[in-house]
Image (tube, rainbow, N blue to C red):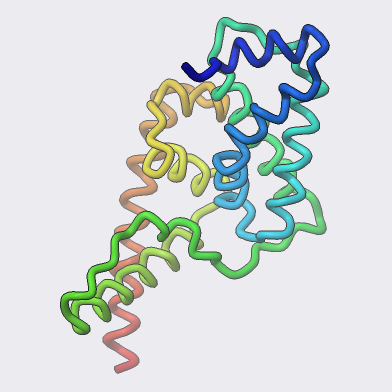
Length: 188
């Protein structure tokens, strides 16, 4: 049976620093994906993700077991990524394609593949047009499959505010995709 996060934290707090590597292994991909979704820059996301684990290690004594560890580490990740976007050195770079990893590809028909690729590119451009905090909420809800109340705890927004933001983002994405389709028609 796998150890729970709480068991591992207890070991780390008891002086077993090497047990922290288990938490890093368990959360490194999710932390990176969340940070990458906000920053859109692989190098910067790697740095921020490393900083997140340093912050987590140094703040582990502050962790209260009244919340899930995953929620706590996501909150630190979210805050770190958003803080990075506020720095003057931050520049939003080319879309990495991170959001599109979950889209299945079929090889039945080349036309279908071309259409899917075009749809993915439209979605990719629309997502990249969102604000960093919106991209983060989108990732948490649709790709990490987090519940509204978890997203609320991670972002510090009220549950109703999260629902409103998701609703507005869906409308905004739809509008951006339609606008992209219109531009494609006009150009061709």
